[in-house]
Length: 205
Image (cartoon, rainbow, N blue to C red; front, top):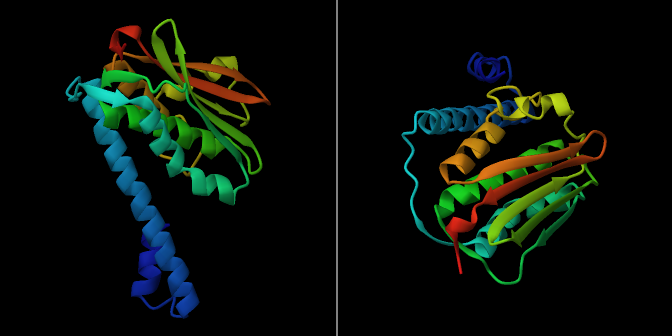
């Protein structure tokens, strides 16, 4: 698609201004997708080779959730998705890598928005249980059959052609690198709940 659009413009096959604009939009979109793919592949390769640097800093999870939530607010408005954020009210702080925690949450939200239909519902929630904290992303997408719940964390198994197929594998590898984990609860036809858990040992009192 990318190369056909470039060739069409270069060879003068497309000359109408509106058609040129459409072709250029395709070029930009495909370039962005390839850029994301290269970045994701590099991130995953570093994680799997254990050559990934993780910083240790105090991370205000309420602030991180606000940032992640805001990144998708416009898409939710445009697609009329019931999009909510619920914090704990006590601003939990963990010792972790704030940028990577944000990346995990963003990847989970991106997956939720990819599969939730227009007019659906997505919830982002911060919970604290027995000293540990978890970030939960609930969606009303198609749900994941039991036999697919491990495979969706494998590389390039996504059936969605708009994504790179690496969002969930990277999220899980990052969660492990941060000392946490990702859990999944899902019901076909009703949706999924992804839970990013950080252990109590990382939580500051």
